[in-house]
Image (cartoon, rainbow, N blue to C red; front, top):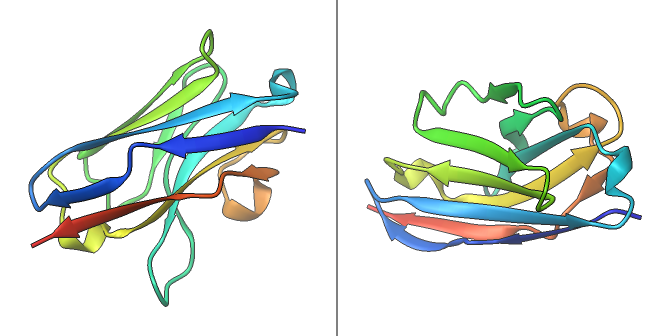
Length: 121
């Protein structure tokens, strides 16, 4: 069973930066894609950024070059560098992983518990 543990969330002012980390353990050799998702109150969970085992990436349209996802396979860790944060980025951010292809939330097999990011205006 794969376990995912997120860290790095917190309170930041608009225009600031945060770096989220997601450490994976347990059965990780079966993992292909990993991603960051977010869910704000009253909204559906959406893809923020995803990365394949070979390093190909995908981003939500709202990212617009502000965020960067990266993956350290040696450390079994995925990172999300978030710059130029806006108040609308406030949400719980989740790390997820799958043994399949694609980044749709329904395709992800494993989820972390989430970390709260609050951006004050």
